Image (cartoon, rainbow, N blue to C red; front, side, top):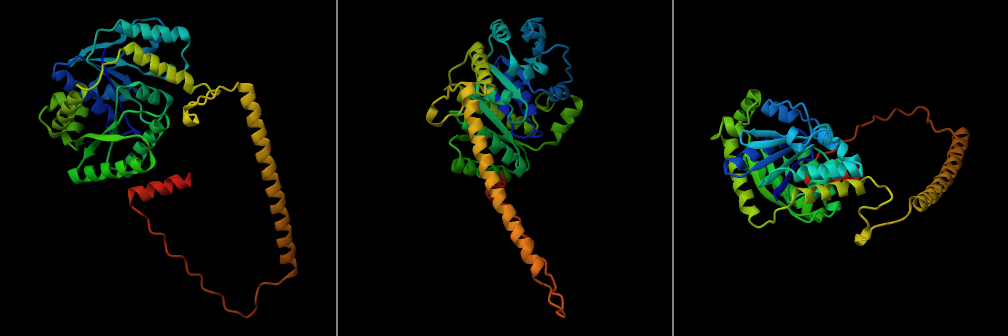
Length: 360
Protein backbone atom coordinates (compact mmCIF):
# COMPACT_ATOMS: atom_id res chain seq x y z
CA UNK A 1 0.00 0.00 0.00
CA UNK A 2 1.38 3.42 -0.94
CA UNK A 3 0.40 6.97 -1.79
CA UNK A 4 0.93 7.13 -5.55
CA UNK A 5 1.81 10.49 -7.10
CA UNK A 6 2.38 11.19 -10.79
CA UNK A 7 4.51 14.25 -11.58
CA UNK A 8 4.08 15.46 -15.13
CA UNK A 9 4.19 18.49 -17.41
CA UNK A 10 2.71 19.57 -20.69
CA UNK A 11 6.08 20.84 -21.92
CA UNK A 12 9.68 19.67 -21.59
CA UNK A 13 12.36 21.78 -19.94
CA UNK A 14 10.27 23.00 -16.99
CA UNK A 15 12.24 21.08 -14.33
CA UNK A 16 9.79 18.21 -13.80
CA UNK A 17 12.46 15.54 -13.18
CA UNK A 18 14.40 17.80 -10.82
CA UNK A 19 11.26 18.37 -8.75
CA UNK A 20 10.42 14.64 -8.80
CA UNK A 21 13.87 13.65 -7.55
CA UNK A 22 14.29 16.36 -4.92
CA UNK A 23 10.72 15.95 -3.65
CA UNK A 24 11.36 12.21 -3.23
CA UNK A 25 14.50 12.96 -1.22
CA UNK A 26 12.64 15.50 0.90
CA UNK A 27 9.92 12.95 1.74
CA UNK A 28 12.61 10.40 2.65
CA UNK A 29 14.24 12.95 4.97
CA UNK A 30 10.96 12.98 6.92
CA UNK A 31 11.28 9.26 7.57
CA UNK A 32 9.05 7.98 4.73
CA UNK A 33 10.02 5.03 2.54
CA UNK A 34 10.00 6.37 -1.02
CA UNK A 35 10.38 4.79 -4.46
CA UNK A 36 10.90 6.99 -7.53
CA UNK A 37 9.81 5.36 -10.79
CA UNK A 38 11.60 6.97 -13.73
CA UNK A 39 8.85 6.77 -16.33
CA UNK A 40 10.57 9.19 -18.72
CA UNK A 41 11.37 7.32 -21.95
CA UNK A 42 14.63 9.21 -22.42
CA UNK A 43 15.91 8.51 -18.89
CA UNK A 44 18.66 11.05 -19.57
CA UNK A 45 17.48 13.61 -17.01
CA UNK A 46 17.75 11.28 -14.02
CA UNK A 47 21.15 10.18 -15.29
CA UNK A 48 22.35 13.75 -15.45
CA UNK A 49 20.97 14.67 -12.03
CA UNK A 50 22.32 11.59 -10.21
CA UNK A 51 25.23 10.25 -12.25
CA UNK A 52 23.52 6.82 -12.29
CA UNK A 53 23.55 4.83 -15.53
CA UNK A 54 21.68 1.53 -14.98
CA UNK A 55 22.37 -1.50 -17.16
CA UNK A 56 18.87 -2.97 -16.82
CA UNK A 57 15.43 -1.43 -16.83
CA UNK A 58 11.73 -2.31 -16.77
CA UNK A 59 11.94 -4.07 -20.14
CA UNK A 60 13.92 -6.92 -18.53
CA UNK A 61 11.14 -7.32 -15.95
CA UNK A 62 8.37 -7.33 -18.58
CA UNK A 63 10.16 -10.02 -20.60
CA UNK A 64 10.54 -12.15 -17.46
CA UNK A 65 14.36 -12.15 -17.63
CA UNK A 66 14.77 -10.40 -14.28
CA UNK A 67 12.73 -9.61 -11.21
CA UNK A 68 12.00 -6.05 -10.16
CA UNK A 69 14.42 -6.34 -7.25
CA UNK A 70 17.18 -7.12 -9.79
CA UNK A 71 16.79 -3.80 -11.63
CA UNK A 72 15.84 -1.44 -8.80
CA UNK A 73 18.51 0.99 -7.62
CA UNK A 74 18.53 0.62 -3.84
CA UNK A 75 19.07 3.37 -1.30
CA UNK A 76 20.23 6.23 -3.48
CA UNK A 77 20.51 9.02 -0.90
CA UNK A 78 17.74 7.27 1.06
CA UNK A 79 15.33 6.47 -1.81
CA UNK A 80 14.88 3.58 -4.25
CA UNK A 81 14.75 4.24 -8.01
CA UNK A 82 13.18 2.04 -10.69
CA UNK A 83 14.62 2.78 -14.17
CA UNK A 84 11.85 2.62 -16.77
CA UNK A 85 13.42 3.59 -20.12
CA UNK A 86 12.42 1.32 -23.05
CA UNK A 87 10.14 -0.71 -20.77
CA UNK A 88 7.79 2.26 -20.44
CA UNK A 89 7.47 2.48 -24.21
CA UNK A 90 6.41 -1.19 -24.34
CA UNK A 91 3.62 -0.76 -21.78
CA UNK A 92 1.10 0.17 -24.47
CA UNK A 93 1.52 -3.15 -26.30
CA UNK A 94 1.80 -5.78 -23.57
CA UNK A 95 0.35 -9.25 -23.98
CA UNK A 96 -1.82 -10.65 -21.18
CA UNK A 97 1.10 -12.80 -20.05
CA UNK A 98 3.42 -9.78 -19.88
CA UNK A 99 0.78 -7.79 -18.03
CA UNK A 100 0.53 -10.54 -15.42
CA UNK A 101 4.32 -10.73 -15.16
CA UNK A 102 4.58 -6.99 -14.51
CA UNK A 103 1.81 -6.91 -11.89
CA UNK A 104 3.26 -9.94 -10.10
CA UNK A 105 6.69 -8.29 -10.09
CA UNK A 106 5.33 -5.38 -8.07
CA UNK A 107 3.78 -7.77 -5.55
CA UNK A 108 7.32 -8.77 -4.55
CA UNK A 109 8.36 -5.21 -3.68
CA UNK A 110 8.74 -4.01 -0.12
CA UNK A 111 6.08 -1.66 1.22
CA UNK A 112 6.52 2.02 0.38
CA UNK A 113 4.88 5.07 1.89
CA UNK A 114 5.20 7.04 -1.36
CA UNK A 115 5.54 5.82 -4.93
CA UNK A 116 6.36 8.70 -7.26
CA UNK A 117 6.16 8.50 -11.07
CA UNK A 118 8.29 10.94 -13.05
CA UNK A 119 6.69 10.88 -16.51
CA UNK A 120 7.74 12.10 -19.92
CA UNK A 121 6.54 15.55 -20.93
CA UNK A 122 3.47 15.73 -23.14
CA UNK A 123 0.24 13.79 -23.52
CA UNK A 124 1.26 10.33 -24.72
CA UNK A 125 -0.91 7.33 -23.84
CA UNK A 126 1.63 6.18 -21.23
CA UNK A 127 1.64 9.55 -19.49
CA UNK A 128 -2.16 9.76 -19.40
CA UNK A 129 -2.44 6.19 -18.11
CA UNK A 130 -0.12 6.97 -15.17
CA UNK A 131 -2.11 10.11 -14.41
CA UNK A 132 -5.51 8.42 -14.55
CA UNK A 133 -4.43 5.59 -12.21
CA UNK A 134 -2.75 7.79 -9.59
CA UNK A 135 -3.91 9.12 -6.24
CA UNK A 136 -2.63 12.52 -7.12
CA UNK A 137 -1.21 14.46 -10.08
CA UNK A 138 1.35 17.22 -9.72
CA UNK A 139 1.53 19.33 -12.89
CA UNK A 140 4.73 21.36 -13.24
CA UNK A 141 4.78 24.57 -15.26
CA UNK A 142 6.68 27.84 -15.46
CA UNK A 143 5.45 31.41 -15.88
CA UNK A 144 6.16 31.31 -19.64
CA UNK A 145 3.02 31.55 -21.84
CA UNK A 146 4.04 28.46 -23.84
CA UNK A 147 4.41 26.41 -20.65
CA UNK A 148 1.01 27.57 -19.36
CA UNK A 149 -0.61 26.74 -22.70
CA UNK A 150 0.89 23.24 -22.72
CA UNK A 151 -0.17 22.76 -19.10
CA UNK A 152 -3.70 23.70 -20.16
CA UNK A 153 -3.51 21.13 -22.99
CA UNK A 154 -2.63 18.42 -20.47
CA UNK A 155 -5.54 19.46 -18.24
CA UNK A 156 -7.85 19.44 -21.26
CA UNK A 157 -6.97 15.78 -21.99
CA UNK A 158 -7.42 14.80 -18.33
CA UNK A 159 -10.78 16.59 -18.32
CA UNK A 160 -11.77 14.70 -21.48
CA UNK A 161 -11.07 11.41 -19.70
CA UNK A 162 -13.07 12.66 -16.70
CA UNK A 163 -10.27 12.73 -14.12
CA UNK A 164 -12.13 13.41 -10.87
CA UNK A 165 -9.55 14.65 -8.37
CA UNK A 166 -8.06 18.17 -8.34
CA UNK A 167 -4.73 18.47 -10.15
CA UNK A 168 -2.12 20.21 -8.00
CA UNK A 169 0.04 22.85 -9.70
CA UNK A 170 3.70 23.66 -9.02
CA UNK A 171 5.14 26.76 -10.70
CA UNK A 172 8.90 26.27 -11.18
CA UNK A 173 11.80 28.63 -11.95
CA UNK A 174 9.94 31.52 -10.32
CA UNK A 175 11.70 34.90 -10.31
CA UNK A 176 9.08 36.74 -8.26
CA UNK A 177 6.05 35.82 -6.19
CA UNK A 178 3.85 38.22 -8.15
CA UNK A 179 4.68 36.60 -11.49
CA UNK A 180 3.90 33.13 -10.06
CA UNK A 181 0.53 34.28 -8.67
CA UNK A 182 -0.31 35.97 -11.96
CA UNK A 183 0.61 32.85 -13.98
CA UNK A 184 -1.43 30.54 -11.76
CA UNK A 185 -4.40 32.94 -11.79
CA UNK A 186 -4.42 33.01 -15.60
CA UNK A 187 -4.26 29.22 -15.78
CA UNK A 188 -7.01 28.79 -13.19
CA UNK A 189 -9.33 31.31 -14.85
CA UNK A 190 -8.92 29.61 -18.24
CA UNK A 191 -9.49 26.14 -16.78
CA UNK A 192 -12.56 27.31 -14.86
CA UNK A 193 -14.01 28.88 -17.98
CA UNK A 194 -13.51 25.99 -20.41
CA UNK A 195 -12.92 22.71 -18.50
CA UNK A 196 -14.71 20.61 -15.91
CA UNK A 197 -11.48 19.61 -14.12
CA UNK A 198 -10.30 21.41 -10.97
CA UNK A 199 -6.81 22.62 -10.07
CA UNK A 200 -5.19 23.60 -6.78
CA UNK A 201 -1.91 25.40 -6.04
CA UNK A 202 0.69 23.19 -4.36
CA UNK A 203 3.58 25.63 -4.29
CA UNK A 204 6.42 27.28 -6.17
CA UNK A 205 10.12 26.56 -6.63
CA UNK A 206 12.14 29.76 -6.87
CA UNK A 207 14.78 30.35 -9.50
CA UNK A 208 18.08 29.45 -7.81
CA UNK A 209 21.64 29.52 -9.18
CA UNK A 210 22.54 26.63 -6.88
CA UNK A 211 20.22 24.35 -8.84
CA UNK A 212 22.50 24.65 -11.88
CA UNK A 213 25.56 24.04 -9.72
CA UNK A 214 23.93 20.85 -8.42
CA UNK A 215 23.22 19.64 -11.96
CA UNK A 216 26.86 20.15 -12.90
CA UNK A 217 27.99 18.16 -9.85
CA UNK A 218 25.36 15.45 -10.58
CA UNK A 219 24.07 15.70 -7.03
CA UNK A 220 20.45 16.68 -6.22
CA UNK A 221 20.28 20.26 -4.92
CA UNK A 222 18.27 19.10 -1.88
CA UNK A 223 21.31 17.11 -0.74
CA UNK A 224 24.06 19.48 -1.89
CA UNK A 225 22.43 22.75 -0.79
CA UNK A 226 19.83 21.84 1.87
CA UNK A 227 19.33 25.48 2.94
CA UNK A 228 19.20 27.12 -0.47
CA UNK A 229 15.93 28.76 -1.50
CA UNK A 230 14.97 25.99 -3.94
CA UNK A 231 15.37 23.39 -1.17
CA UNK A 232 13.23 25.47 1.18
CA UNK A 233 10.52 25.57 -1.49
CA UNK A 234 10.68 21.77 -1.83
CA UNK A 235 10.34 21.43 1.95
CA UNK A 236 7.22 23.61 1.90
CA UNK A 237 5.68 21.47 -0.88
CA UNK A 238 6.58 18.32 1.09
CA UNK A 239 4.75 19.61 4.15
CA UNK A 240 1.60 20.24 2.09
CA UNK A 241 1.77 16.76 0.59
CA UNK A 242 2.12 15.13 4.00
CA UNK A 243 -0.79 17.13 5.41
CA UNK A 244 -2.94 16.23 2.39
CA UNK A 245 -2.02 12.54 2.64
CA UNK A 246 -3.83 12.26 5.97
CA UNK A 247 -7.12 12.58 4.09
CA UNK A 248 -6.37 10.02 1.34
CA UNK A 249 -6.49 6.23 1.25
CA UNK A 250 -3.37 4.27 0.24
CA UNK A 251 -3.51 2.26 -2.98
CA UNK A 252 -1.99 -1.20 -3.58
CA UNK A 253 0.60 -1.04 -6.39
CA UNK A 254 -0.94 -4.04 -8.14
CA UNK A 255 -4.28 -2.19 -8.31
CA UNK A 256 -2.54 0.88 -9.72
CA UNK A 257 -0.93 -1.20 -12.47
CA UNK A 258 -4.19 -2.96 -13.22
CA UNK A 259 -5.92 0.41 -13.72
CA UNK A 260 -2.98 1.77 -15.70
CA UNK A 261 -2.71 -1.18 -18.09
CA UNK A 262 -6.50 -1.42 -18.50
CA UNK A 263 -6.54 2.21 -19.60
CA UNK A 264 -3.77 1.54 -22.14
CA UNK A 265 -5.59 -1.51 -23.48
CA UNK A 266 -8.77 0.48 -24.06
CA UNK A 267 -6.80 3.46 -25.40
CA UNK A 268 -5.37 1.29 -28.19
CA UNK A 269 -8.69 -0.35 -29.19
CA UNK A 270 -10.21 1.74 -32.01
CA UNK A 271 -13.55 -0.08 -31.87
CA UNK A 272 -14.25 1.26 -28.37
CA UNK A 273 -15.23 4.86 -27.84
CA UNK A 274 -13.38 5.79 -24.64
CA UNK A 275 -15.14 9.11 -24.18
CA UNK A 276 -18.76 8.51 -25.20
CA UNK A 277 -21.44 11.06 -24.56
CA UNK A 278 -23.30 10.72 -21.25
CA UNK A 279 -20.95 7.96 -20.10
CA UNK A 280 -22.24 5.29 -22.51
CA UNK A 281 -19.53 3.06 -24.04
CA UNK A 282 -19.86 2.31 -27.73
CA UNK A 283 -19.65 -1.42 -28.45
CA UNK A 284 -20.09 -1.42 -32.22
CA UNK A 285 -18.35 -4.20 -34.08
CA UNK A 286 -15.35 -3.00 -36.16
CA UNK A 287 -17.02 -4.06 -39.44
CA UNK A 288 -20.18 -2.11 -38.63
CA UNK A 289 -18.18 0.91 -37.58
CA UNK A 290 -16.04 0.78 -40.75
CA UNK A 291 -19.18 0.57 -42.89
CA UNK A 292 -20.59 3.64 -41.19
CA UNK A 293 -17.29 5.48 -41.68
CA UNK A 294 -17.29 4.57 -45.40
CA UNK A 295 -20.81 5.98 -45.81
CA UNK A 296 -19.80 9.20 -44.08
CA UNK A 297 -16.72 9.50 -46.29
CA UNK A 298 -18.78 8.96 -49.47
CA UNK A 299 -21.26 11.59 -48.30
CA UNK A 300 -18.47 14.11 -47.65
CA UNK A 301 -16.85 13.35 -51.03
CA UNK A 302 -20.18 13.93 -52.76
CA UNK A 303 -20.54 17.31 -51.05
CA UNK A 304 -16.98 18.27 -52.02
CA UNK A 305 -17.59 17.20 -55.62
CA UNK A 306 -20.72 19.35 -55.77
CA UNK A 307 -18.86 22.38 -54.41
CA UNK A 308 -16.00 21.85 -56.87
CA UNK A 309 -18.45 21.69 -59.77
CA UNK A 310 -19.99 25.01 -58.70
CA UNK A 311 -16.54 26.55 -58.25
CA UNK A 312 -15.39 25.43 -61.72
CA UNK A 313 -18.50 26.99 -63.28
CA UNK A 314 -17.87 30.27 -61.43
CA UNK A 315 -14.23 30.32 -62.58
CA UNK A 316 -15.39 29.80 -66.20
CA UNK A 317 -17.84 32.70 -65.94
CA UNK A 318 -15.16 34.98 -64.50
CA UNK A 319 -12.69 34.02 -67.25
CA UNK A 320 -15.26 34.76 -69.94
CA UNK A 321 -16.02 38.12 -68.33
CA UNK A 322 -12.31 39.02 -68.22
CA UNK A 323 -11.87 38.09 -71.89
CA UNK A 324 -14.61 40.48 -73.02
CA UNK A 325 -13.97 43.54 -70.84
CA UNK A 326 -11.12 46.00 -70.44
CA UNK A 327 -10.37 47.03 -66.86
CA UNK A 328 -7.21 49.10 -67.22
CA UNK A 329 -8.04 52.77 -67.42
CA UNK A 330 -5.55 54.67 -69.53
CA UNK A 331 -3.84 57.97 -68.54
CA UNK A 332 -4.76 57.55 -64.86
CA UNK A 333 -1.90 57.92 -62.39
CA UNK A 334 -1.15 54.84 -60.36
CA UNK A 335 -2.64 54.70 -56.94
CA UNK A 336 -0.15 54.57 -54.13
CA UNK A 337 -0.63 51.38 -52.17
CA UNK A 338 -0.59 52.03 -48.45
CA UNK A 339 0.27 48.94 -46.43
CA UNK A 340 -2.26 48.08 -43.72
CA UNK A 341 -1.51 48.87 -40.13
CA UNK A 342 0.12 45.90 -38.40
CA UNK A 343 -2.25 43.95 -36.16
CA UNK A 344 -1.65 44.56 -32.50
CA UNK A 345 -0.37 41.44 -30.75
CA UNK A 346 -2.20 40.64 -27.55
CA UNK A 347 -0.03 39.52 -24.67
CA UNK A 348 -3.05 38.51 -22.61
CA UNK A 349 -2.86 34.75 -21.90
CA UNK A 350 -6.53 33.95 -22.35
CA UNK A 351 -6.82 35.96 -25.60
CA UNK A 352 -3.67 34.37 -26.97
CA UNK A 353 -4.94 30.93 -26.01
CA UNK A 354 -8.35 31.55 -27.61
CA UNK A 355 -6.66 32.67 -30.87
CA UNK A 356 -4.52 29.55 -30.85
CA UNK A 357 -7.56 27.31 -30.26
CA UNK A 358 -9.50 29.00 -33.08
CA UNK A 359 -6.55 28.50 -35.45
CA UNK A 360 -6.84 24.77 -34.91
